[in-house]
Amino acid sequence: MSSTASATTPAVVMYANDWCPYCSRARKLLGGKGVEFEEIDIEASAGARAQMLSRSGGRTSVPQIFIGATHVGGSDDLMALDYSGGLMPMPKAEAPPLP
Image (cartoon, rainbow, N blue to C red):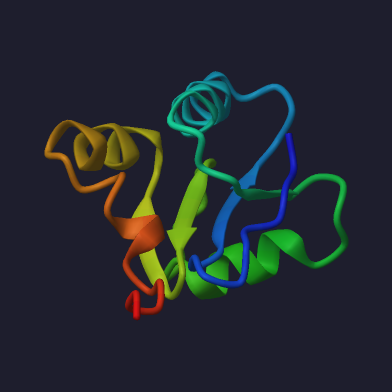
């Protein structure tokens, strides 16, 4: 699943690969919440692994998930964020105020 977030929400980006069960779990959670995200396959996109390593502070496991400039972490971190109620407000945090 690969989508682009709208201009009013921060981009949700997940570095992943096709065979990772933790990536599947993160995809299912994000999709189930209706969160649009861009998925970058680190095995299929040239330079994607290096970009993930740079953005995540050297973390080598997938998935690595970012909401805007915020590094959420991996699948367990995403689940913890959701459990604490922090997942749903984050994608809307940068939305412009209503008139």
